[in-house]
Length: 383
Image (spheres, rainbow, N blue to C red):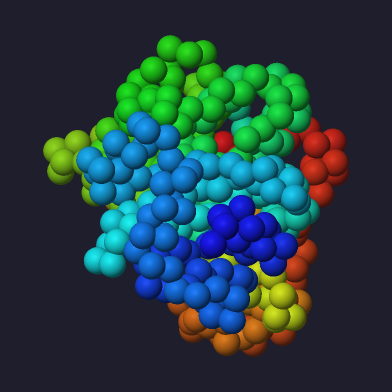
């Protein structure tokens, strides 16, 4: 088996992930479904699989793999369709060495490509604070953040610093200066990179993932000291996101952290990626929380369980419960009702939205961003 040929086939078929493992044939994930290539490839032997994976590793990466038994790397190949980049996880498992490749587009999508709501687009215009993107792995959080980073790059003369594991999208500098750092290659961890970042004169900081107490603490500090910080968490709704951040800290510090988070938060976007009703492609549904004074008070006073009430009451101001976003896409025939029900955190609310006779798409939380129209507004985004 030839790795470039396999990856060229993945590009042609618009695959999101490629799975390689011993004693299995390669498998492609297409539109969210995993499809083994049983008719095109034989199962790989452990030696064949190891040889394919080792062919793309440097000596240093091989040493790290032997020591840690799993590594995340970025890798690129010159294919007939063009230079293609991948985020790769390599790991030992019971049958031998295996790898999963995530294909990274060379083109950063526009807000229109992502059907990005106006509320999210406006996060690219705020001067400071913390914006969080949450959801399961593979729901497009990194792509949405990359779109916002690129909007800032196109419109504002700022210094943008990204810390990623590994680097995914790469940017062509336009109005902004962009510094990208990768864990293991340019820094030893998110914590050290963020400590250094505060001395590197950034305006905007992208933190690939807030994984631990140190990273969360430093991200909050960076937001508090006048930087605009984007980051991700693996949580399924807004209240869970707030609780996850607070619960990382010792009980004696949690009141202070609630106050800190309430003052720096600009918004939380929870995203799911759904198969289109047409059978081809996927589309995102998003829950959008904006940090209004009421939301800040709920966070500060430890009432995160009330945030859903703020979401439903703030729709005209640009907020959007996930169930409303799902219902809108069902009404527009973009997804099926069955798919929406599977993803809803509160199925009863989804049913209520679908039954509503006065259902309207003409609210900021549902309206897709039209950048040129929004850029002409005298608006600095949510505060």
